Amino acid sequence: MPSYRYLTQNVLTGAFLASDLPLSQVEFGPALSATGAFTAVVEPRLPYLDRSQFDPGASLIHAERDGRLLWSGIVWRSVPEGQQMRIEAAGVGSYPYRRHDLHGNLGGRGPYVYADPCTVIRDAWAYCQGQPDGDLRVAVDATTSKVTVGTPAEPYRIDWWDAPTLGSVIEDMTAVEGGPEWTEDVSWAGDGKAALRIRLGWPRLGRRRTDISFTTGVNIVRSVPVEYDADQAAQVVVALGAGEGRSRRRATDAARDNRLRLEHLLEVPNEKGNDRLAARARTERVSRQITGEVTEVIVRDHPAAPIGSWQIGDDVPVRVYDEWTTFDAWCRIVGWQLRPGAGEAPEHAVLQLQRADRFTYMGGSS
Image (cartoon, rainbow, N blue to C red; front, top):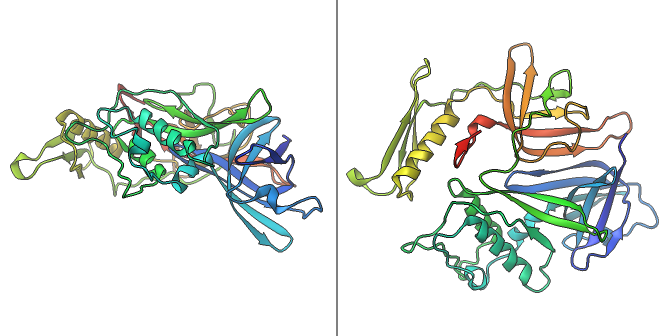
């Protein structure tokens, strides 16, 4: 059985507070363009344990498996439950949601005209960590994209009087059509400290994996039922962009698939580009034509896909067999949680999936 270790650090000084916390009921993992999470219970209550070793808002907690750092985040809650203490933490990506732009345009870095969303994300983190007592020592990838945000007529502005959270600024950038994706990452640095990182990906995070797979009876121990739902299906998508009445921009994308014709109206009131509007209509149509979905599988450590061999954003073959259907498709990993083994319960991972063919990337589709 693999060996797990849980460590904590002072969030500002980096000084280690605990080198091997006794935790049970542990679950942790990252997500795609969202904050990862960690939950656990401190038990037993040992004499050397002190609440300051996992002080909410002041401590980082790390999860290590066989000497490899798999997850790190900020402790936000510690709740006593008798002799136990329940800990809740979130990835470092949660910190910008606790911070606001109090100076406007990220301290003068904006307003933004034809700016790369990756640049704005880095600026948000630079502003966040440049304020007193705000430096988590998080490095943000130098990734660039070919997408832009803001125009001379309508720059992307962040007004100080609105005091938006920095997390909402980052959300705006990932919401841009064809924009970047992000996730959290951590590894041991050469000086024995944890190196925290925001991985930026464009046109995507992850890659298509032919070296690993998830299959019922091999490494899938349980899965949700395969979902077939036509309630949101459509082969015809009409996208309505900027403008009013006859002058409103409009794009239609349609395909025939020998099924009953279903239509969907996509409202994009701020879209002024005909090419971008057409691209959004196509992306929506492709997504809505797909039927059959496995949204979650529970897998065990296995040579077909060892624990830790996958990354957020990877496309992986998934084969699920049950009494009603056979599902065999490429699925994208959009989140995962690792549950270490305890007692008779074996180690396993819970993976959140989406059909890979629902995603369309700039320059091509998966």
